[in-house]
Length: 230
Ligand SMILES: C[S@@+](CC[C@H](N)C(=O)[O-])C[C@H]1O[C@@H](n2cnc3c(N)ncnc32)[C@H](O)[C@@H]1O
Image (cartoon, rainbow, N blue to C red; front, side, top):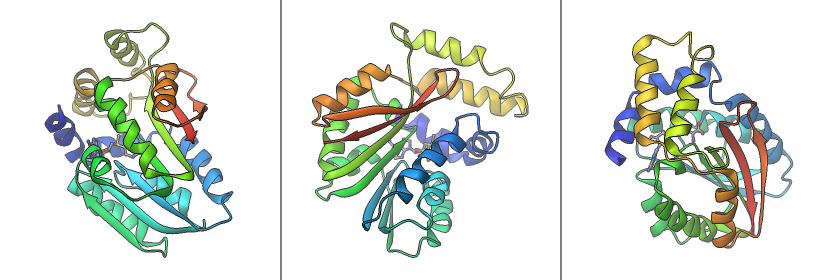
């Protein structure tokens, strides 16, 4: 499955259409993250996992007290864009072209803020559980972990989620070329493994994040932004 996800995100222009047409609610999530980052008065380090082009995070961090940025993604085209996006932050920046789960497994550092956006759902539940433990290790004792992911409704199956997602394409995805719509649906059907918000909160609690809450859910209940801390 990792290869399929990698191939999909190497066609960065399709994902870019989602950002431009706000079909994944980047605008709303970016604004919440921006408020959260601007509210931090003490300098902090930021770990951006599956950073993509870092569009959302670079905008949220601009003008904040961020003192070092680390981005991780296995897509070279996305990282090339991220390098440009975070250049304006005016703090040291490190970009790693690698798998975020492997990065977390090997990582022994801690970060004041960790953000993982729209990527944990590619893993199965056992791998999510293991990754959540490493996410807890990577988050400083007084730090915060933000997770933005697609969500299942209570009792909904993966197949039910895919059908719900496909049914909601008409409208938001109308401006997309037909081949981009097809590629997106194939990606969702083959590579997405969402969990319910309750399951994400439970996985995080098990991993040692004792505080967890949902900061945002879109009107159709397809995506939620979570905030976790120890
Ligand atoms: C849906 S985009 C999300 C980008 C950004 N985090 C956001 O919230 O807009 C997914 C990104 O995660 C990357 N990605 C997916 N799975 C990954 C993995 N296992 N390791 C590293 N990067 C991954 C893809 O290359 C892509 O850039």
